[in-house]
Amino acid sequence: MATLKVPACVPAPEQDSEQLRKAFSGWGTNEALIIEILAHRNAAQRKLIRESYAAAYGEDLLKDLDNELSSDFQRAVLLWTLDPAERDAHLANEATKRLTSNNLAIMEIACTRSSYDLFKVRQAYHAQYKKSLEEDVAYHTTGDIRKLLVPLVSAFRYEGDEVNMILAKSEAKILHEKICDKAYSDEELIRILTTRSKAQLNATLNHYNDQFGNAINKDLKADLNDEYLTFLRATIKCLTCPEKYYEKTLRLAIKKIGTDEKALTRVVVTQAEVNMQRIKEEYHKRNSVPLENAIAKDTSGDYEKMLIALIGHDDV
Amino acid sequence: MATLKVPACVPAPEQDSEQLRKAFSGWGTNEALIIEILAHRNAAQRKLIRESYAAAYGEDLLKDLDNELSSDFQRAVLLWTLDPAERDAHLANEATKRLTSNNLAIMEIACTRSSYDLFKVRQAYHAQYKKSLEEDVAYHTTGDIRKLLVPLVSAFRYEGDEVNMILAKSEAKILHEKICDKAYSDEELIRILTTRSKAQLNATLNHYNDQFGNAINKDLKADLNDEYLTFLRATIKCLTCPEKYYEKTLRLAIKKIGTDEKALTRVVVTQAEVNMQRIKEEYHKRNSVPLENAIAKDTSGDYEKMLIALIGHDDV
Image 1 (cartoon, rainbow over the protein chains, first blue to last red):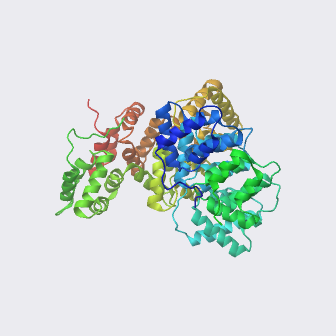
Image 2 (tube, rainbow over the protein chains, first blue to last red):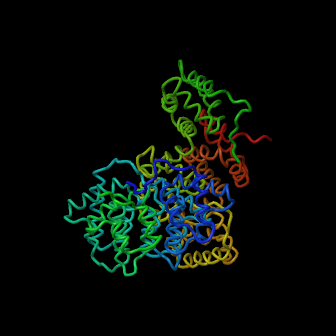
Image 3 (cartoon, rainbow over the protein chains, first blue to last red):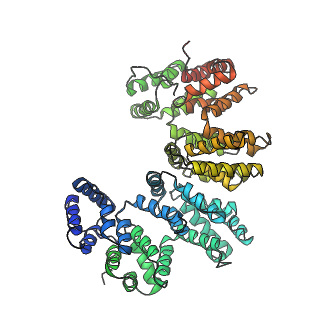
């Protein structure tokens, strides 16, 4: 469930564009007005605002936002305003760069979006970067992480609920054997994780747990400092319980000395319109403090206001 | 260029359906009428005929064709009548089965269709088989062939003409090094072949030829009996000169003792509406005999008539 709150009566895109133009004009910028409008419009509405803004003023709203705003607030507003597929393409591209390299951000996109949404990201990637997503991911990674990440971003998983229990049993056994042999990047293990539908994978991992006594991620904790193993566990968590994966990502981002604003922004802007309500519940349960309080404590100013506007206040 | 010939004035789909229904009725089947209609309608027109047939008679045209026809003729008509994406999904699925295993048929689909058409095949595969294409391909293959084939079917290559010459040079060098080391299934070699755009790949392979004195496929002829090497050469040919790849496939199918009807049908039905004119030219050039003569010599009856209707007679 989304946390995005859209007013019952949404102004016409032309009106929103006019208000945004006003927020940019004169001395200083009216950040509160920008948040009031953009943080309370859904993707389709934001798209119409961008179109009407371009039609009315001959300028790209994103460029004007880029000029008017700065730092973490700027990044949050820009990413939020983008179309979801464009945003994911942008995040993935950024994550393939040497200095910002972040394979988790790419894995997140590959594992939590629907199959068709992931395909739309790949289309947006072509349009924006004149290259394919998998091409950049494969070029910028190596070794075991590449072996796992490239098929993840290239997948078009079946999304039906059908489950083959015989297959679940046989593939649980394969996974267990490979893990016992410490063959964590074995091609059969990677094949199962990167090609099976999420429903099938769930059945396989449930059977794994029943049959072998441990959740697979527990058996994968052999070496907590191994980068690939950490990545593998995160991938499995992302595929099977995205809310828990995102809860942990937020927890680590907030707990970090200095706060990891990049990760915080990424999770909030990509999930506010999708699954943030469930992530907030997980966060509260795990940390005994509501996510909005934790964010308010760790951030400030317009950036804080933007994030809180997106994740909403839980009515007490 | 296609060889499919559609009459200047095409009857309404209802009329075609009625004629087809007549062709099935009474004692015996009017095969000539079936060819006259179906072999001269494009994909969009065939789709309308199927829809109007289902609406008028409450039956699936494909099922009726299946009941009325037999053997190679039946297979050619059924495959031809299918929507191209459904047809490719069917051919790929058939090729993953143990008894008919044919990795070349899958590779052909992955390497010669446009990126978006390959995606449509993956969508059709979900709809028809309740699984993903890559899932079945990965499950039914092993070793080096799997390492190459799975990323090929999962690719969504960029299709622009932009070429990065610096990259072409550096990747030609990588390919040459790997081939010198006989590391034919090295992950860098596979990465380059499975992720780069066809334009980029062409530039890389041209540079390879210029710089190292041989076309890459010549350097890959180290072991003519190695299944993987043969597959790798076919893949490169398919990506860079599909007409030549198809010419060779037809040549081998026709030359084979007993003729390989499966391959012959596959190439004709999948290419008649796409690139068959160029393939015919290649065939004539390479074999000194027009393709239609070679096919007429090797096939007979309605099957022959269907194939010849699809590839057309070259007007002398």
